[in-house]
Amino acid sequence: MTHTIITQAAMRPSVWGLGADALHDGYWRAHGVQCVRRGEARRLQPDADLYLLVEPDQLVQFDVRTLAERLAWRRARVTRLRVVDHHDEPYGEQVVLDERGRVKCIDRRYRHRSQSAYRVILTRHRALAHCWMQSASRRDAWRRISRTAGLSNVDNWHCRGGCYTLGDAADERRLIARLVAVWPRPDRVIDGIHEARDGVWVRHGDALDESAVAIGPLWLGRAANPVGRRCLIGPAVQTDEAPASPEVALPALRLRDIRDVDPGDATSAAPPRPTRGGYELAKTALDVVGALVGLIVAAPLMALIAASIYLADGRPILYAQTRQGRGGRDFRCWKFRTMHRNADAIKHMLAIRNAADGPQFFMKDDPRVLRVGRLLRRYYLDELPQLWNVLRGDMSLVGPRPSPDEENRKCPAWREVRLSVKPGITGLWQLRRTREPGLDFQEWIRFDMEYVEKASFALDLRILLSTLFIVLGKDGTHAPDKAR
Image (cartoon, rainbow, N blue to C red; front, side, top):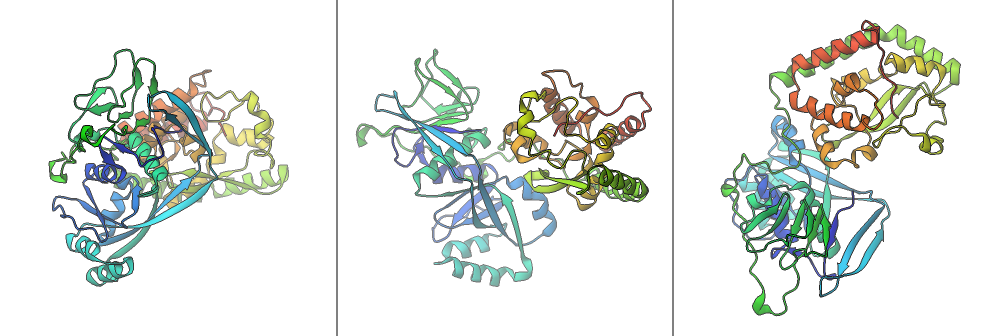
C-alpha cells in the first residue's frame, strides 16, 4: 500500500508543531518505551518498561511485541537488535500543493529494491541507558555497557522494521507516514489533538469542513484541513503549513510522560497476542508430539509419494516457498511438488483465468498440476512435509494459512492480526471455505480473524479431528482445491 504525505515543500516535515523525532519518541512512549539518544542529555523516566538506545540521527519503527516473548525468556540485560528495513515498494508518490492549497503536481518516485539496517539496543536498566546517554562515541558507549552488564548478559537478535535518518526530509516524511498507519490513538500521548472524524486527527480548535471528504487514518497538521474541493483518503498526512510570519506560529504540542500514558491503552495496530500460559504450552506440546508421530507413521507413505512424483516428472520432489510466520519472520515452507517444474514461470500467462477474488491465484482444472498432484491435493497429502516445519517451530498444526509477503502486504490490517500467531497446516478457513465466487477472500479474512480471537486448545483439537475426518472421507467430502 502506498502511504501519501501531502506537503507544501521539500522542507523538513512537522505535524502539530512536532517534528519527526518528537513523533517518533511519542510513538515509543505509547508502548512504554523511552527513546534515548547517545550524547543527548535528558531525564530518564523511571516508569519506562524499556529503554531504546539509538544514535543521534537514528529513527526506527518495529513491533516491539514480537520481541516480548524473547525478552522475557532470554532474561538478558541488554538486547542488541538489528532492525532490517526492506525497501521493496517499487513505486511511490506524493502530492505537492502550492501556497493556496491547490494541487501543483504529483511527485512520482520509482524506487529500486534495497535493504538498510540499523543497530539499536534494548534494555530495562536505567544505569545502562545512562551509560549510553553520557558516551561520546558508539564504541565508548558499547564498551561501558558491556563492562557494566557483562557479555554473558547480552543477547543478539534481528527483526524487520523501518530505518529512517533524522535530518533527511524524505526519510522523515516516510517515518511519519508509517506512524499514521500503525499508531491508531496518538491522542493518548500527544496533548492538544482530537478525533474530528473516525481516524481523522486534528489540533484542538481546528474543525473539518462538513463537505470535505476525509477517510482515516489521517493526520491533519496546522492550517491544513481539507475544504470542500479536496478529498483525502488515508493512510495519509497533511504536514504543517509554514506560517506567514513568526508571530502567527503556534507552539508545538506537548508529549505526555510515560507515567501519564495508560498502560492498558490500545496503542498498536496489531491485536494482543495470546499470552504464553497453559494454552501456549499445551499447544507447543501438541505440535511437537503430533509432528513427531506424524512423520514416523507417514514415513512409508511419504516414500511412496516421493517415488510417484519422481516417476511422473523427475526432480525436485519437494517444493519450497518463502512464507511469513509469527511476527512476519520469513521461513521456507515445504510441500510435495504437485505441479510441473515450470509452473511458476507460466503463472503469469494464466493470470487472466484467475478465479480468486483476493491476492491469491486459483483456477479450476489448473493445467500446471500433475496427475499425481491432483490426488495429493485432494487428500492434503502434499502438506505432509510441513510436519518438519512444525517440528522446527516455524508452524503449528493449527493456525492461519501461511502466506508469502507479496500477499500479506496487500492487506496490512489483516496481516497484523494473522501474523500475531503461528501459521498452521490446517485451520478454520481450510475447513469452512465455500469457494463461492467473490467470497473466498472475504471468507479467508473472516475465518483467520475468528481463529485468532477464539484460539484455544479445545478449538485446535476440534479442527484437527475435523481435518482428519475430511482426509479420510468420513463426512463424504474432500478438501477443496488449493490456491497457489
